[in-house]
Every structure is written in structure tokens, then in C-alpha cells.
Length: 195
Image (cartoon, rainbow, N blue to C red; front, side):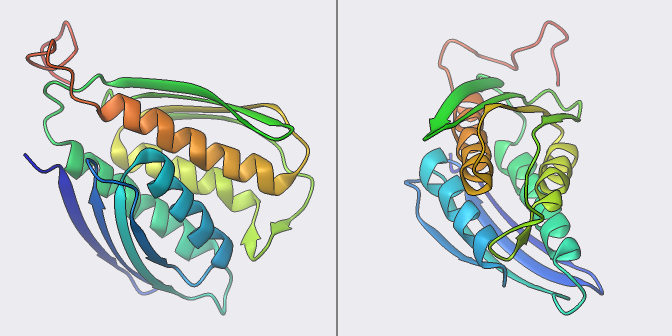
């Protein structure tokens, strides 16, 4: 069974197409018009071993807000669709990921109850062409459209590039773990019988 989603999201502000294969090898073809976001989505694909294709066009003449937020919404929709009925998945994933001086904790519960806890600060307004305040907005959008409980916490770090990259890599690794199919789980991992 291929766990795949193809999402198209078109608004007056953005046009986004994303293909996501959960059981991939880390291949990606990304073009959002925001170089640093492209870099982060390549990292997400590679470290989560997801195959990801993204084409996004947004009103970047205004600013990057709509493109980044809508990219998060589209990715969340793709994750939710690709995971499907959640039968057999581990549901939870977590990691403490080092990147040079930076240490990031990420924990995920694919519970269908969206919630974001984001504990991280940036010392600059931009990293490359990415507005750092949009990092939280991106993960908020992903968590709410995917229906996941997502915790991201920066335990240490000073370099904004390292902090953001650490978050994306940690998110990828935790999501990979949460979506792994465990043969011991024959239904959904919940005493309620559904998620």
C-alpha cells in the first residue's frame, strides 16, 4: 500500500501543488520562490525519507507570509491524507536533534487533536530570504491541518540558520517515526478505537 497524497491549494494569494510519499527515499523537487524555505523542505524530505515534490507561486511582491503559511497548510493536508486511517502506525514520534551548537526537541502525536507548542526565539528578522517569525506560523499551519499535536523546543542554540534547520530536521525525524507501520498494532493505537 502506497501512502501517498497529491494536494493542490489555490487561492487569490497562492497556488501550491504538493506530492508526498511517506515511504520514500528522501528525493525532492522543491520550488516555492523562497530559497531558504526550499532548503528546509529539501531537509525535511531527506531526513524523513519522504519523497516530496512542491511547486508554489505566491504573492511574494507583498511578502512571504501567504506563501509560507499556505505551504504549511498544504503540507499538513498532504500528511493527513497520506497517513490515511492511521491503522498500524506508531502514532508517536520524538527526537532530540543536535546541529552544531543547537539542540532541538521535537515530539509528535498524530492524535487528530491539533495543538502546537513552539518554544524558540530568533535573534534576526530574516535568515536568507525567510522571515524568521514565519517559522512558527508554518508549523502552526502544518499541525492544525494535519491534526497533530506538535511540540518544538529549542534546548540550546544561537545561530538562526542552525535553529531553523534543526527544527525542520527534527520534525522530519519525529514524523517518520510516528508514521512507521508497526506489525504489532493491528488497529489504531488508542483505547478509544479511533483517532
